Image (cartoon, rainbow, N blue to C red; front, side):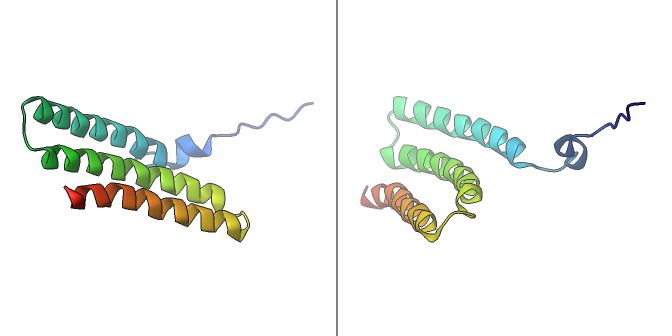
Length: 104
């Protein structure tokens, strides 16, 4: 007689009511869409480019945080050279967001 076992999905049963990375990613996309839409409207109305750039920078930074978390999960078990590459890339990305905002 074959023994059947019912395996429950750990993601569906253990994360009910919790904010998993997938749910955070979705709502971050929604929030970024709103920020980009507001920036687009402000830009079309001729509002200062500093406000538009700030809104776009905030949206980009929030999305980069989620991507950085996922990337760290990939890089963590890798050799040190991967971790160095990860941090160098993060520093360049952060500089790419902050420096243009400061120079305006």
